[in-house]
Image (cartoon, rainbow over all chains, first blue to last red):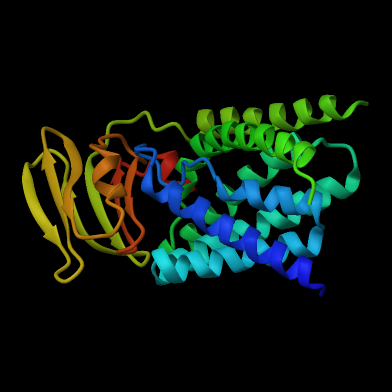
Length: 161
Length: 120
């Protein structure tokens, strides 16, 4: 890896961590757990489009582990990891089809993040009651995906690395 | 098709799925019992019509209040307090979830309702 790429990736991982932290500082006070903007996905999508798939995977997984170790607890790592992996798989595949714009990829990523977390939460609780949160999370995930996608599209267009 | 069209198809599909799930899962029946479940095991069951306040757990505690046919977690020492913010629940199938304590407080109907069967 070239020095420039190492520096860029370090910067993006740090940025993703800060975005996660900022998000935790300003919690959206909603009764349903998991409703959030997903600010860190800005960094992930930017990396996916500007650098590449492998870099985006590395960034996202590293961010999840670092954020869980720093701000989270033993359980939050698994929720986040499941959400991040499912989100990455779907975003990578949808982008490869070439049919969706960045906005569509962002929406799919946000929704899948919620779905992955719900799946792990249901497994941890040993109950399917979490499914009741799914409709709310699908709608909030779509809204978050549109917002983040719109901003990410501007960043990808304007920022030259 | 243009990319924008596919994006709209995707968003419409997700929102449609949300609407269908919401309609299918919507709890309607008034509940009868409050189930306290930890790690998937029922650890206590209370009648929704009898007012009481109980502390569930010791080191990791959640304070459950049942009043006027509604159940709510009014205090807890979990990190995120999502369970407290959930507020009061009263309909069969509704639940309060505390992930840090792997605790679920679920309302069930008098008879086994459809919602329960789905939930199990």
